[in-house]
Length: 146
Image 1: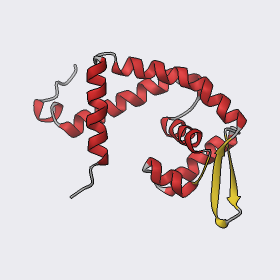
Image 2: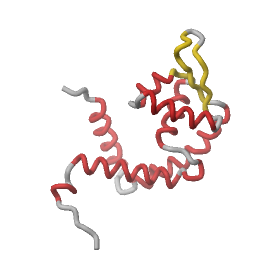
Image 3: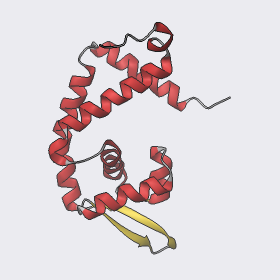
Image 4: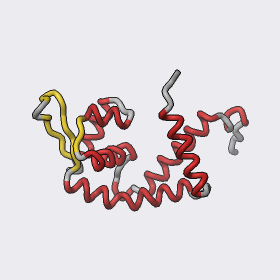
């Protein structure tokens, strides 16, 4: 017997955002299962594709993650030879991370699966609604707290 959620839960924005996020994770995982990659790892690879190499602290700041999480993500990607980490010669305390050639190829192979995941996730929305949703979410995450 399934339980029907009351509107006091079902229509609350935090609940809806959390459910949408969980659905996105599920769809992404299903479409990228052959690559055994998590969304955060994919995001890190996209960031490195755009910036060639970054300090781990820059990755953490850009992705809104703590440094420990970034270390775990880099460790996982480094084990697969998708990224390389080295000490920054200018600042021996910092590690510079870059995509490897194998990482660039993996990213190119993964992208079509991610496109299909996005299509499935957003299928109920028109293109205009998809743009509107994206714009609203960008506003939510870029507005500074008062």
